[in-house]
Image (cartoon, rainbow, N blue to C red; front, side, top):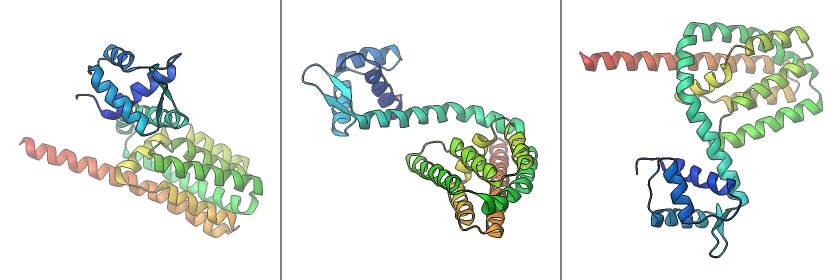
Length: 251
């Protein structure tokens, strides 16, 4: 089978979700064929039965299958994975175009600004803002466990910390930096490649802010940004090493 299993399952769940009625193996086979996926009706039937077993679909007698609530959740997960895969190659191009030093310069600026933002947030954050930060971290934790992109939560968390600081100049300066292209997805992609731990850093920052410990919040943010800088350096070392090895093999 030349197509990945997850791609086939995604296509089947999506067609069932978009269908106006229950779907059978014949319908699945024909629709997969339109997508360039050639499977026998028997194979489609086996996949559908497996989806029943896993709780993603429910069979309605001889009418066919419908999606369960669990199946809708699975479809959303796979849709997110599809988006991540689609962005992956583009991100590689953006990372190369941006360059290591440019990324590091941006992070140096962020370290100077966000360390003071975190310090002020520990002093000024309201209970409502702390609750919102915690909720974002809970969503981020869930997305990490599901293998879903956390770039959106990364932006939200840092924005909430900036708002809690009550300093419009620092908030505006951070917004200006964050308007730079796809910085959050780029850093997330790099961290995935080098196994960085963004969620751990965010939790550490939140805990310091919650305790109203200004020095600890400042230190935690500095550590977080320096970890990002380390990940950028490590990523480029891996890429450079890979290129050197490739050249050696070709000689």
